[in-house]
Length: 182
Image (cartoon, rainbow, N blue to C red; front, side, top):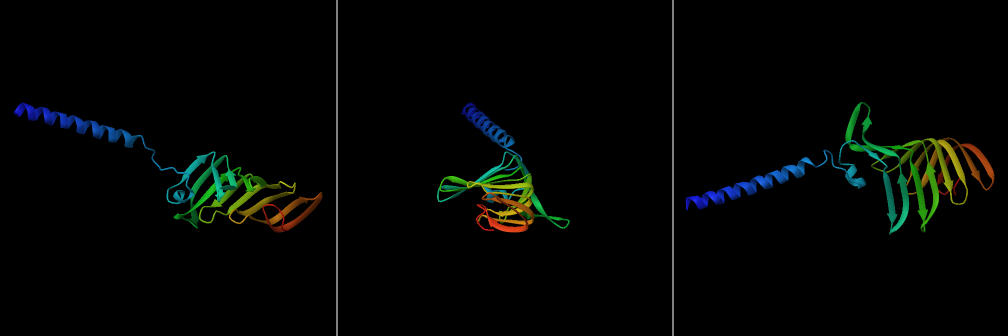
């Protein structure tokens, strides 16, 4: 009877060792920081860098907007000398933003760099900002602000607009991504 208990105890001991070893192996292989492609989840984790970042928005199953960058860095927003974990800013390298309607691309916006406020998704574009539309209109500027949720584009500085063969230069412009309003 004692010999039988000893075998049972040994078998249970080895099963426990195997289970604990398996659990340890699984947890040691997990990344140190959680990574997700879900924008809402990104607001709850720490700083991170993403190579080849892409964000695609759909409206009732139809692609509405596609944002691609060479690299994106999600950082805590600085308020003075403080960093707040509740507000995040996305630093974008070479953003390429395309807007779609009825399955067709209607405009494309490129820049050297940009910053995205992760709370309201507004994007500030800097350096060689270029907006091209499917109808051939082209807007160039050094700085612009884009609100992707409603397609509004704002240029506070100088801009050049090529529209219907006419070139317009000016300072300050509020328009949409199709350059219909000016």
